[in-house]
Length: 431
Ligand code: GLU
Image 1 (cartoon, protein in one colour):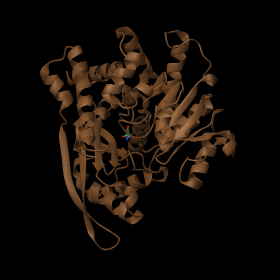
Image 2: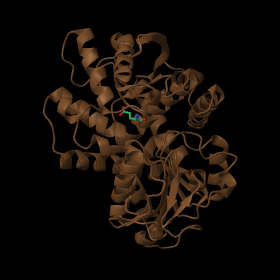
Image 3: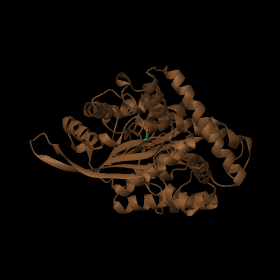
Image 4: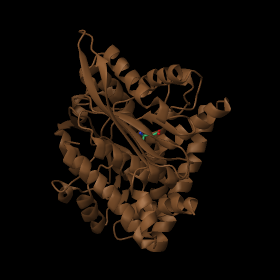
């Protein structure tokens, strides 16, 4: 996200697909309006004390898009380029995402315009606590349930949860998800988004292997190559679990660089190497050994145009756009970030026959395990990691199946099918 304009574009494209889906389903103007307008927009500023004794004012949002299916649900992002339009677009996509996987939530999203990398740990803690104080009266375990998003994590959720309970003066274990396990978080939440993506990719591959199409003849999973853009939590777990499934991860990147390992790299060794160096650049890891002879360095943006079978954008939005869409060679794209493909690039690539697993399905594993954390918090009884992973698998496979069937029945791409499934569910609940 580079500027307000991009946030605006993202919002327009989320609203335009909802509108066209609703029109194709024959919904009336009132219902379409209800699906597009956010129910509540909280926009505010708040001061935070800096370590040097000065104070700075930060701008924040919590946008509550739709609560027909249940409490608002969605993460909080800290990013210097975030804006109201972007947060609203993401809140809108959360309503769709929760409906696609069939969990009892509406959509919401929060954001603070800040570059957290410029803050000390104690400044970050004060900012997180001040932010949640601002929205404490608008959220609640049966009202609006925040979670992590870009640049926020379990530690930040723990600070926010602690501050929230101080404000309301009681324990409320399920008000925030993505908490550390010691504070009522769920086992399996950290790996959930990546795991969910691999579950739906596996389901897609098995469908494709059964039906030979123009782009796909029968293949062996171990012959497929994958490039993963972004090696944060989502990108790492996606790579690790896809590698365990037998796929060949030939390239990964982060904000500082990218590597290409022709024989397939080892995600765990790459993570260890990244921890040492602060970047994946220079980490050519095959098996447990990292050595320059196994790979080569590539320009980080070139990862998107590599000749691979499967491309996985797992970082920020709008990275596949009109400037690079014609160079994309992958046959399958798994949208692990929110909104990584612009509308123009999406139209171009789908016309070309590229199969795109849309973000509202591909990355829904995170919010799904957030839901499982919420259920555990409310019932005061926690499941084992295997139980959580099993429930995640069940929910994601069913969601994939619903979307796949819709796509086949109506002969529409998976993204359109996902919006159809979601909007039908929301509208049914409104009747
Ligand atoms: N931020 C994640 C998402 O965009 C997770 C949201 C949640 O767990 O509520 O789906």
